[in-house]
Image 1 (cartoon, rainbow, N blue to C red):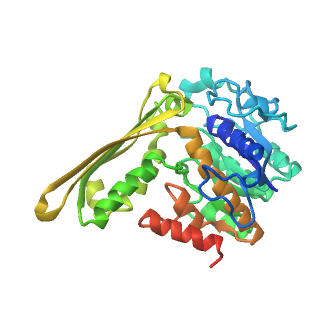
Image 2: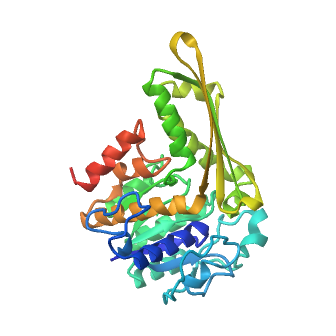
Image 3: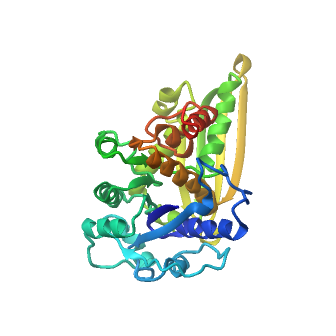
Length: 361
């Protein structure tokens, strides 16, 4: 069994929790829709949620089976959830709620100490803590990472705050020192805008076409997109998504310096709900300088796209725990995250690294 705790019981957490129940209902040998059916000896059905943290009065104190359907969550019910006996604990607010989101999130007023989070993690015997806070929650994300260190649990950072890829090296060193694995940062989708964009730019490079300019515009209708209406919360997000694409290019510095790339959330369209629409444009020059242009759109359910990747990462991190591997999981993060500690040149290389990790090469 893999015992997980979740920080931020929003739409992605709702789909993750429901998805685990969905596969349990289907039986151990049902693998349709999964990226990797078995990792080590672990299946999706081996994952159990033993703790959850949130700052919303709508969710705190409720069983997670009930809390995941409380507003502002809009993820549809895909299974009948049974009561789990796990109640949502209050978490530290810090910068997790933008001013324009207070009426939406309905946050608690009192501050929660990190020691309280640590105690819940220890009492629940959590193996892995997953950070699913809103984009822009820099302080709050680091607080949960510190709680994971103090509690002696592994950490998965699904949002664009640089913890596994911390440029100061502080968090990677601390997790390595304590023999705790960490995976991150900023999770990719199963077939999301970033991986689709990377596939196009990688194809250009493979076929000798120089990418001259490109953009990716994303719109959606859930609280993620409403939260990201404030540009100051997007600095890490834009860096993460941009680096994920430019890392596939030979002229990475040139295209960034000339301002020929723009990637990131663009607008909040309420009626889209959890549907995310990405518009991708890539222009390049091929043989004899002749122009080649691609314009594409991708429409996905944003939260199932996230949950499909999370169930793989959870099992890979548990495998690292079993093998007593501490610190950033380079070979796992490169395949599943937009801003890993080390970027692979393309997704074929990233998958090779992940496969090597699973097979323990």
